[in-house]
Length: 392
Image (tube, rainbow, N blue to C red):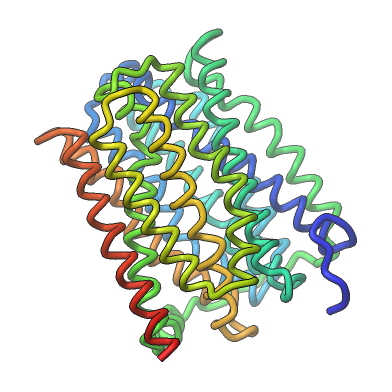
């Protein structure tokens, strides 16, 4: 494969380009949580209906993971990347024009399809060009999404200060249009359009044939449930329960991703040097502990510290575990296998916002977030147990 350079050479340039795409897609998708209190008020909806909208976004996104990876194996990575950027651009434009809840749901669904087509193909492309430094490359790529999360919080604050929540999506639409052209120009792959059967049964059978993969995907489901639940409602939680102002809550939300942007490359590199199972289990354990502290914390300083530690724990998990899964999958079906796994764990995780909204409507935010702590503890035990089994 030759020397693997993360930001130089053809492989490095592709890594940078698809990571910028992921940064922008994430910044657009993650605009919704900090804007959610204003959206709820403007559209006159309940927290439960808002949770349904977020679950629709994540659910559609999840359903697109396997088709994205499978088609990228049989067509080309470039075909899926450009299609994803184009559809997401249309979806964010639709959100800009959403004046009622049904139109809001339509925009959210289109965004889910566009963003859903992108990341599995992007990760498969990265795996095509990186082997020895795959963990580091995954860390850099996934960290770009966290930079996007931080940018989303800033965009939300500016949009609400100068106009309505809808205008926050305009810079996202413009940037995606530019990046679509950039990926089109840079990639040497051809566009390939043809009919390819999905063959979901074969993919599922192949993926879950190994006991280790089944248990690791189960643990990943618990991680995704916690992550998507907290990401969807953290700004609202900080305002409603911890007494934060909208600006301070958005800053806390941004901090979640900015910490992740630093942690993910470090965790990916650490996973390349150490046993990935131990790094992943340690990350989940730290996330569970920090989220538990966040629930009981009363002072602003304690809440901020717990949020930062939660980011360190949860953001350290994906690059390590994804690199491990990619090393298990056969090269010929790597994209499809990762896509099927992502469909499962993101699909389960998409229920996180609906779970939060439902529990809040009947009890409180603290009870809802405490339930996520329990899920992370179980995930930690599962990953630690499987790692120990592998050593045995």
